[in-house]
Image 1: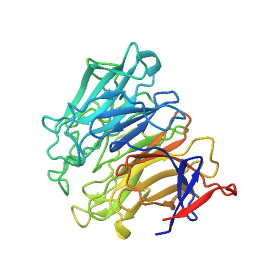
Image 2: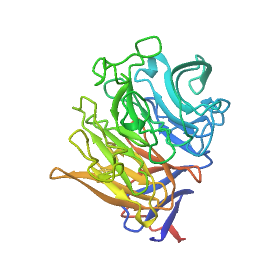
Image 3: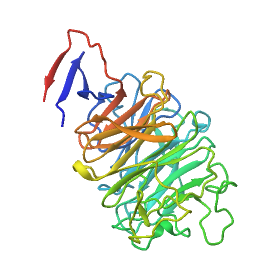
Length: 387
């Protein structure tokens, strides 16, 4: 591994490795196992912490607000792969004050999707009494809970559900359309008593399939995101023993994709061990194996900010064990991945602010970093210390 260069400028730490394509600038420390970084349509960042609290970081601040935006720790079972795992703000949050959380329930480990409202008197506080539970999904095991929430460009809420846990997907729910486990779900939070089914959902009206399903055959889609420019959907799916994958769903998709698990792990047969692939499956655009200490993918975003021209159009993702960060871009119709940084971080989440600038968080140290391009002409008064 290349030597870590820590540059100190005006008391702010910036981390990069020699010849890396990105630089990570430390913004905040002291977070408690961050799992989501997002925004509410303004300059604030909202950070979910696995034990159950949502923190607010004001633009330009070097620490989060002392009082959490919302504290759900009394409801949440943590930790391992359980906890407060997802957060999404309604597209019309400025008007209605609604936001949505995904957590595992303390009583039984079930996944809960709930809506809350911002306080009527304080924009930096939520109303803890405003909870409306939209969906509860039993979890047979404690791992593979998914947890990602994202509103798509269509205004519908997308929910990432893991396969229910254990190992090897016992019972094969990821391929079972009568179950919500192992799926990407899509619901309409603006209709129905708690939610409605979008009329274009691919399995609407099917008696042998849950109408909420948008796509299936995922193991643990630990972070998916929409390209803010094109509307394409990127799904990073954690593998079993050997391969991690990135799935790409174009904005023109009508849903219903089968991403293969458990029949396939990446582009390789899993169960059955041979003759696993058929025409119903959509293969990942890229994968990586578990060599060199790699173990678990964390999906990111396709960069669409305005500050960094070389990163434009690059989708970023990371490996939790090795700290490797990749970028993938399309060239002559093929998706081509490259290592953009080699770090010592345990990256659990990426995030995007209102302007499309990107961030990531280290679960082990509780640090939040902004992502930028390296400074190729550093001022002479900076000093570097090698570790």
